[in-house]
Image (cartoon, rainbow, N blue to C red; front, side, top):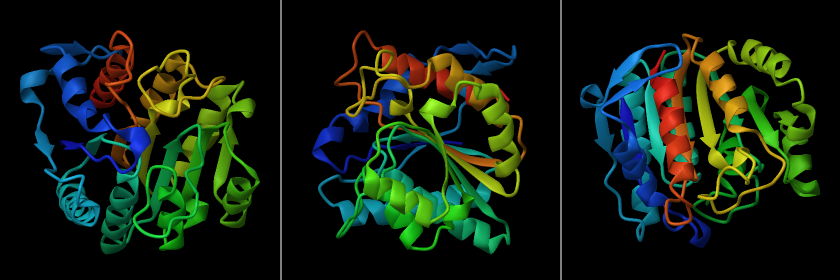
Length: 265
């Protein structure tokens, strides 16, 4: 199941609402994944959460309720953002489904940022992870990969809540790190969240908060192909692609590549 979530919850993410449609528009009639599996575009099961970005509380409720339903009724669900704030509602829905099924929720995040700024209300794309943890998602079940733009406050929050962090500077042997992370993630049901700014900004113009010295596109695809082999991979999201900032459609093409490889399991 592929669900479009056209959420925008901050000024720096205006344009992200278009990403889902652009990714799917760019998806070929027949996609051949790198494992040789053929994916027919016409066979994709698509839904969209129709929301009003001027009514964020209502939008959040819609995302949460729809996410609970599709996660419960599908073996695997892919959410196409939208900005990263959608991960708060999807994460809460995932946690709720895992609780109902008496399973352990594991959250693996690819992101250049920690997204743990303090929020006074509905969390935006720089605040969602903090709010999710403060409301009960177990920090020790969260793995953050690719961090390279954090401050003292961010790092203290991550450490205090026992969130496992694999900073970009330590990913030189990324195949070994992937082995370690996969063993950790296998302890429960997996939600994989992909903020496109985990990729080095030289490759992704179409995102608001790009950071240099990040992952290559090949490194990210390697991680995703490995994770795709785990049967307990339940939820994936792709967020923070902004077609309005994109140059020659390269970031959207990356989103399409990510989607195709996730489907190719």
